Length: 373
Image (cartoon, rainbow, N blue to C red; front, top):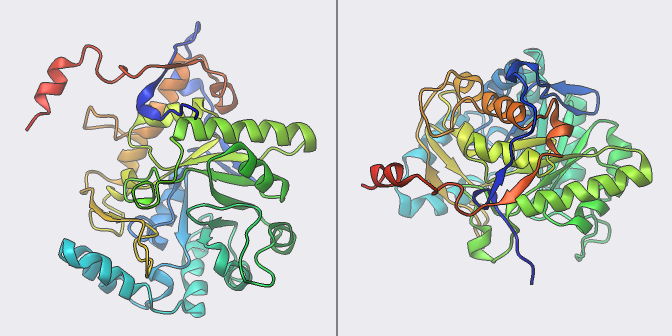
């Protein structure tokens, strides 16, 4: 049995040279697209709609639209969002199961993508492996820039009764655009996925604020250990192929400190859910729910109240109006890189990290008693 570590159990060690935050480079590259903010918005209906995707693209990040969500099932998704956010807690799971049983409408896929593209934004969309063969060609014809294939746990090999499931090398050849696949949390699974020809891998099983996978089926690896393992696979694959596959830590990131630790663990970018669900532009109206919440037989998500705290620009770029690290996330990353002597993301991968379970409690007595109800 191995010891695994999450964000709250480690700390970053300052470097010997400090750098002004405005002198560091946080660019994230996937395919021929470069993003000045290495943050992706999770492909969840409470976070990303076409308007949110456009706004985040303008700010320098990337939002991923869920092509199996309410925006491709309903002509008027706003009315459905009102139902979800207004439902009593005891009824929300059955309501979501009913709402997401509505068939996906192919014409809506093109319409939603068209809105994003006409605004000049980079368009990334997400779908599950089971629906990729059907939906990916439709999305490509509509003009997407990046494809994300995502499920709770994704592997390069899958056993089922299907005669011929999704073959990732064939998908990469067919699509001819950047493909990000997830989620995984081990060296071997990440390496196999990379060898299939993908451009990015999502790391994280069960750490999200609205995900209950770890409670329901007991599966998951804490994010620091999981990111380290997948980053090691990236280096192995780079040495054997010459191709650099981006590692994207997905889930469990709540503050700027968590964000910095993800990059020090080897991430090239992060995917964030609940912090962005708190933006005034988020369609969830202060709520957030897991992608697996509507599962018809075994839900692995829940609806959580996150509140609406600030505009998206303030959450990402500041200025912050709070002291808990939940705003100005890009500024926190720049400052963290500066004090750790990292001029770019790759140098951030080399920052020394220590096991420090007291990092959030040492000397914090008055903060602790102040937060007691």
